[in-house]
Image 1 (cartoon, one colour):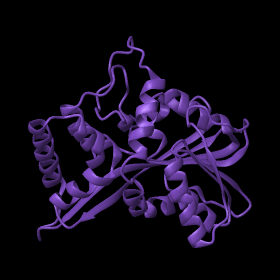
Image 2 (cartoon, rainbow, N blue to C red):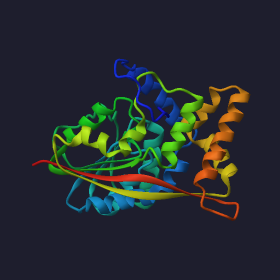
Image 3 (cartoon, one colour):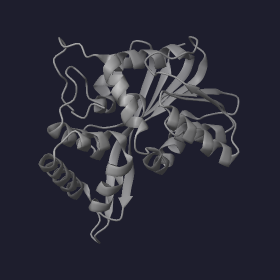
Image 4 (cartoon, rainbow, N blue to C red):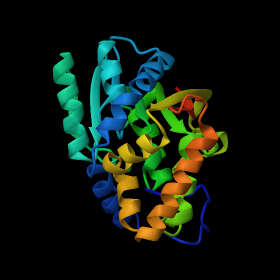
Length: 280
C-alpha cells in the first residue's frame, strides 16, 4: 500500500506486479475484516446514493469483506462481490450466509476484471479500488464493465482527512515504492476528472464523514497494529526505535483529530462519496 500523498515523478515506472504481490500479502495478513465491518454504514449510504433497485445488477470491486455487496443484496439487487484477496472474500461469504443474502463471489484483480464490457448496471468500490497500484488501469476497468447510462459508486478517503493523513504519517517513516501514486488522490476532484470525465455524463461528489470510535488513541493503535495488515507490515519493516517513533506520530495524529474530551477516541474521517454516470 502506498502511504504517501506525494506523487512521484512520472518518469519512474513502478513494478506493478511486484507491488501488487506485496499488497496481497499485506491485506491478507492480520484481519482487516475487524476494521471493515465497522464501515458498514458507508456501504449503506453508497447504495442509497446510487438509488439501487431490485431489478439491477451490481459488481462490487475490491469488495473486501463485502460492505457494499451486502448493502446492495439487502436491496435485492443481483450482486457479484469481487476481490483479489481470497481471505477477505471468504469473510464476505460468511457474512452473507449469516444474513441469508444471495450473491456471487469472484476472485478478481481490479486492474484486469474478468467481466465483459458494459455488463453491469452499477459498479462499486468502498475504500478498495483506491489502493490499486495502477490507478489508471483500475479506473478504466470500472468504466469498461459498467453499461452505458449505468453508475460507478465509490467511497474514497480524502488526502486532508484522518485516513489520508494516516497514509502521509506512515509514508514519513516508510517510503512507498518509487513512482507509485498515493491512494488518497482518489479523494480529489482533479484525479476523479482525470479518470472518468471523458466518458462520464456526470460526476457527483458528496463529502461525507465516517467517525472512528475507540476506547482511546492507544487502544486504536493496539487494535490496528494487530489486525490491519498494511500497518502491521509497516511496523515489521522498522527497527525498535523507528517503531516507537511511528507509534508516537500516530498517537499525535489521533490527538490532532480527536473531538472527544473524556479520554476516548472519536475521530471524524472525511471521504468522498462519488457517483459517476456513464454516458449513454
